[in-house]
Length: 286
Image 1 (cartoon, helix red, strand yellow):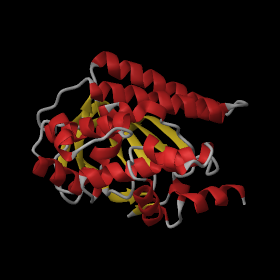
Image 2 (tube, helix red, strand yellow):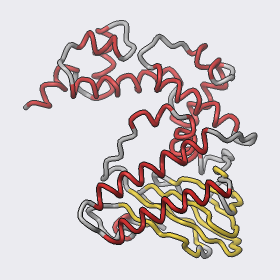
Image 3 (cartoon, helix red, strand yellow):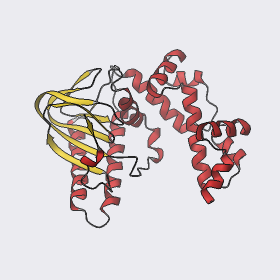
Image 4 (tube, one colour):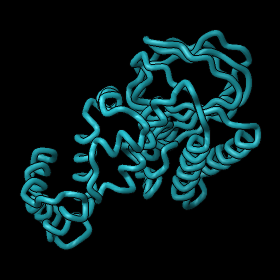
């Protein structure tokens, strides 16, 4: 069953919605086109998809994004808070959040790996952390419900606070059964902080405490591309942002984003985006 976003957001023009302390009943497998943060407030149950099942209980947090199928069964007084948002419609600026390994683990890697027969462990909050996040989600819910002037601005800032807090919580946890995921997350956060430097696959493998072959397999599974290919794409995305907001000195932009050869940079830019750096710059002013 496909759940269209229009059926899940009271305000389609501003697709952010909170369902606080929702009594979850058994639910058949379904997919939807928005991101969903699930926080287990009370009770327990089983969250499942085509490939695997995962027991959930009080304090668990997980993220469903894209069109990953999922459902609930074996419910025992399961109360959850759902935070729904469409990040293709609203703008959430993550600034340096991508330097947090927990952000990559919770919001990027786990959602991609659910449904691939790759067991992932949910974030498990302590009692104090759960109380904190419940307060945050209640504040977001009240802001959206009240719709006072400026509520969209405050709702986005509160949503960003929730995402940041959960990312920090994940960064501080240690899990044995998703150890590989956390290693990859550490590599991703290192790339974000050091993309402008010379980076080798050997160095990335060392950062993640993995062999080069294990690193490559993990990236192929999560992103359908190898670690170095991912790094090149990251650099190109950073370069595209610099071209938007700076003078078009493409050699300097290439060097600032980790490319030592401006011709190689221009060729990869066109391969990735379908136009050259200069054509992209011209399109912004036409």
